[in-house]
Length: 243
Figure 1 (cartoon, rainbow, N blue to C red):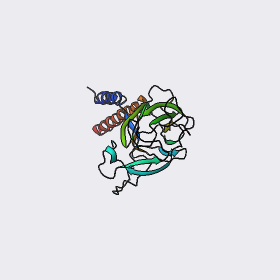
Figure 2: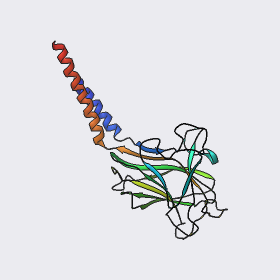
Figure 3: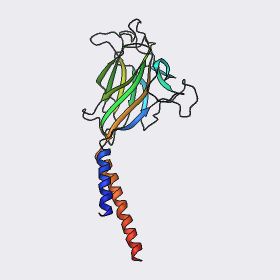
Figure 4: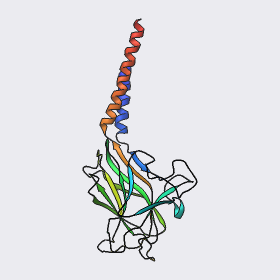
């Protein structure tokens, strides 16, 4: 069989298979770029891909251990930092206004999903609302998560945005994770039922990850490039054979 067609078939098969595979677009593990054996230091720039992470509504930030209290899913055994947030709203105030925000371009990707780990302190809000935005400004409620204990990590919280129009292939995609009142009330419940909610409660984030499936066009370009390389190679070989 002609080698050009063999490589073309392989390239197109690769494109078809790869187009179905979900890839990490951006990820935040909050660990120091250069390990310093200090979980109290870290970064809010992604360790994979691009994007921004910020606190909103008056929340303050620091870094703390990603291994304490059972630990996050970060595979790092040492120098594992989590993004510590506090200064949340007073009781019965500021529903869904304080938390963290991530801006990530999904250009070139479909079937977008997010997942994250979070540690609830005993006095933090029991309910967390995930919101998303198509323009980076206006946010829409998505999934509400409920903690069942305090001083505990809840790993792998995930939201699938694949069926929401406008999330895929969007340079302005953003999402927020904010503290919320208990459903049907105007009060925050504590993560630990034996505690009382407090604005000084903490939520510690780790392994915030955005995934998506590359749009077919990207893989057709890769396949076309491989085919073009074969054609150039064959012309080069033919030219030398004629000498």
